[in-house]
Picture 1 (spheres, rainbow, N blue to C red):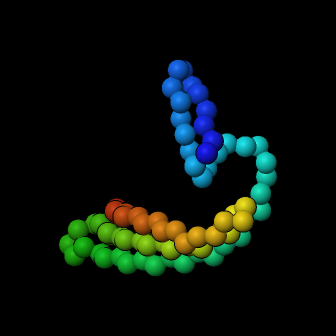
Picture 2: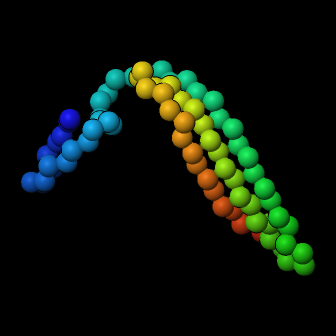
Length: 74
C-alpha cells in the first residue's frame, strides 16, 4: 500500500498512485444513445451510455460512463 503526507494528514491509496512514467494504454469504446425531441418545445433530451474496456500497465477492466444532456434548438 502506498501513502503520502500532506499538511499533517496521511493519505492512502491501494491501486492508483502518482508517478511520472509514461505508459501505453489500449482499449475499446462503445457509445449507446437515445434522444427525444419534446413536441412543441425547443428542447432535445438525450441519454448516453458508454461501456469501455482498457488494458493499462498490466491491469484490464471494463468500466462505465453515462451522460444526460439537454439541448436547445434555436
